[in-house]
Length: 132
Image 1 (spheres, rainbow, N blue to C red):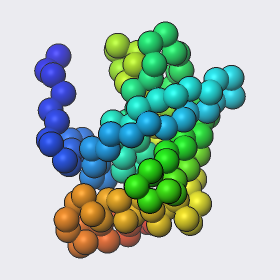
Image 2 (image 1 turned 90 degrees about the vertical axis):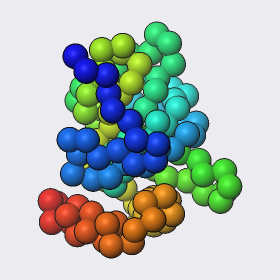
Image 3 (image 1 turned 60 degrees about the vertical axis):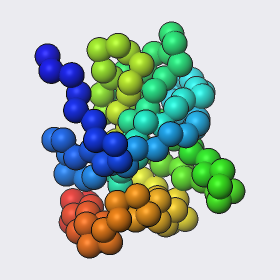
Image 4 (image 1 turned 135 degrees about the horizontal axis):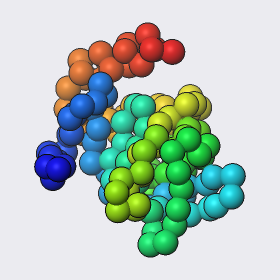
């Protein structure tokens, strides 16, 4: 298996939505666990997370991700489900199923600042709305 390809800021491999690298602490809550996790990257459709050693989740688990944006003293909260767990068991993909207006506003601004292309973000927002 080939090693994953990572670009420094944006990674779009096999994705319909651009992801931005985002190094932040967050909290992942499932029906049975509350975990301190590290956000690897974010997109309009979800996140890639790094779980602590020994933590176990499985695809399909419902969850809530809460990310604090310390420089703005605000946060992003998204409800979703575990989409995939990588072989090492520590990297987990989260699929966003719902997000409140305040969180999507903060996420949009964060993506806008990191993508550097407002047209790309507008295309992604239109694709997101069309898929729902």
